[in-house]
Amino acid sequence: MKTNNLFLTLLLLLLPVVATAQQKIAVVNSQELITAMPEMKSAQDRLQELDKKYTAEMQTMNDEYQKKLELYMKDKEGLSDALLKSREQELTDLQNRIQRSYQAMQQDMEKQQGTLMAPIQQKIIEAIKKVGDAGGYTYVMEATMMLYSGPSAVDITAQVKKQLGI
Image (cartoon, rainbow, N blue to C red):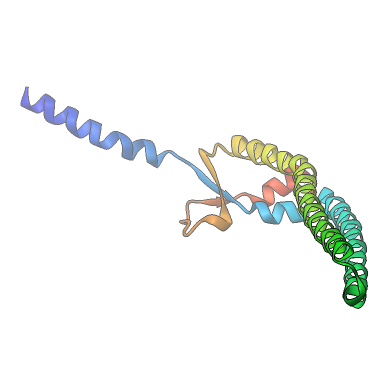
């Protein structure tokens, strides 16, 4: 009875070691894949166009604000209190509009980036899964996030590039 219990205990202790020994681990550099994707260039071009557009819009609003501020500073000595308050309110409103516009543009840039990047990332994930399945890998991990990967970890970045046709 003692021998059976000892045998079962040893068997249970060794099972995780045996299971771990059979796992194949691969690493992939997804950033390298993203930058190599042809779709990435068009996505970057689109984002740069949008950034230029928004930068021009912000510059126009800032120029308008500066003109109104200069006019206010120049004329403020000769203005009545009511007109002075009106111009101050106009400047405050314009500042608020500029801030809201800037935030909206930032949010739209982030949204556009997500929209443009999602299909690229999905394509890469699918290619990684195909290569991982074909190679019989238990895990595929991000190479740039690893503090250490031993000699048994295989870098499949080149295989994934081939799968993607790049």
